[in-house]
Image (cartoon, rainbow, N blue to C red; front, side):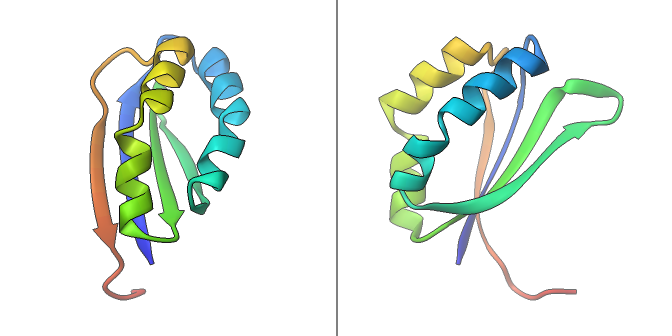
Length: 92
């Protein structure tokens, strides 16, 4: 199962989280199968998300979508996100 790792800073975590939650339907309709949300202990406005996706093609389509870019702008993403496409090798 492919994973997508996204790291970015936001202007205000609480505002960002509201938009993130509103965007859930778009993600699940696009193939997202859940994930984990983290933030930096020393900077709660730095968020890290690890999503599971049904296919790598759907994951790439999601990260390149105009809808995601619009949602990120609305949510107050403050820098260019780091995005990595991952495949789990083993559970250690």
